Image (cartoon, rainbow, N blue to C red; front, side, top):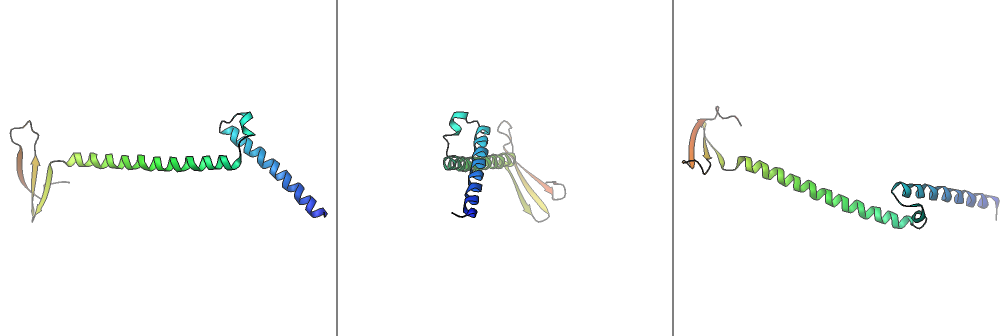
Length: 117
């Protein structure tokens, strides 16, 4: 063996040792005990983290989608029973009143300038 290959293998061993110590400290940061740190393999841990990231991402997208649906439904509930129809310079606004009221449907004709939407 030449001196260069011995020197390169020595550097590789040192790097591997430093990286393994750094990985073990990383696992301890995540809450692994001192005994289990030595048993955990890098590939297994990375696969677990990848699975968790995928699950987190899909769950977060589902929650965001549900919030958007609720916001849309809330907006629809605010305008439920009201219909605005444009008729030339005037607007015909049909307002559905509550069922407690004697008049269930009332039509109001107003000028388009009077309506502020």
